[in-house]
Image (cartoon, rainbow, N blue to C red; front, side, top):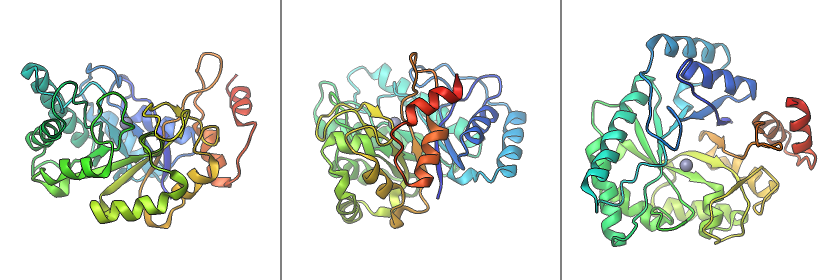
Length: 297
Ligand SMILES: [Zn+2]
């Protein structure tokens, strides 16, 4: 099983910092942003840091082919009402793909975007067109469209929309999907019936397109269209349903990434080391949050 979490990446240590974080959580994979997820300030990738990160990964059994990068949220490929903003998103994504490629990372997760005021079908086409401008044969990065909760005018909120985006992409071997259990729940999928969803996914898109899964509980009920993540077992999806997703035989080779919220009074403590341990034990621990706070304090 490939189990890890969102980790940090800083301008000083870069990927090396991410690997150190992952190891401290006893994870064997991880997901990072190349800078703050909310902005597009990015540092120049340092070859030396990549080498050090690779060495540390090798020593700790972390497979580079399972490592995930997440593009910043502010990229919006769906809306082209302001051409300069649309072009900015495309150009930034191009640079992001190059950064990821330089680090040897294979997968870049992308929120498809929000339509805000334009027709849905046009928004979906804008996304495909933009991705076509970014992907190229001489770049080894696959873009993973994330399934969204349906907050506001988000695109990619059901299988038909994801399929429509993929259908219009030219380099089919460079496009995949990242599921998110919280987003699925909030978009209206019953996670206790996850195998039915996978059957449906296989029929519409093909299960081999799933290259990453974000494992999050949800603060809100099914179909709420909210997208607020909760710690594993403490939300409306529940521990057993999430365990069934994580250990699903059909998704064995797919990396599972926790993006659950930090805990403590000021949300300063990462829960991942403890959530990973609880998932490995397959037993819910009601006192988990208190244990995390005690450990880091
Ligand atoms: Zn995401």
